[in-house]
Amino acid sequence: MTHAEEMAISTSNRYLLAGWMSIIAAVLFPLQFIVGIVQGIIGARAFHIKGPIVGPADFLGLISTALAVYVIIMFRQLLHERFRYHGVDLLITISIWWLIGFQVLGLMLKTMLLLTNLPELMQIVMMLGLFSVAMVTVGIVDIMIAVRLLKLREQMSDLLSAYVFLTLAAGILEVTIVLSPLALILLPITSIILGVVFLREKEEAEFV
Image (tube, rainbow, N blue to C red; front, side):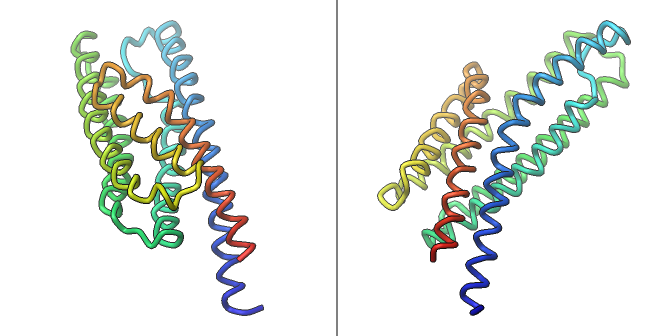
């Protein structure tokens, strides 16, 4: 086996892993919300806890975040290898740190609210404040990434173009804050599309 063939197999395996991770992340995202609702109901009824609760939903969130970080890193690698494009490297790095920061800050805030006896209204305001700041910042980054990637539209497959346009739509919804829940609906869809893009790229890498 030649070095080029070994490189092709290694690349195809990485794309295969990234594809399935992206699809798994898409499944975990709504599951996390469902578990979170059940978690809140159990906490309120069984333990008489009012406010955010740290539990299984947060564990799923950590897994989802880890998968998302890997997928984004692989997406950056795909842009390098397929298009020789580095125009969104910094923005993707910001997205990675945003994902990590949002997860960490969210857990810290929930833990603090769980351990303190703040009024329920104050808890709601603090959680909404974190959510609003997070949505605006990630929305701006998503819009900037999508706009820059549109320069590659003629070289992209239809699936990758759809991913870029959905990312742009999600970013616009996110910065409005009010419509940001609609963006949360788009996220699993974009994740599945990106997963299929990786799986197709894996096949092309094997063919080459």
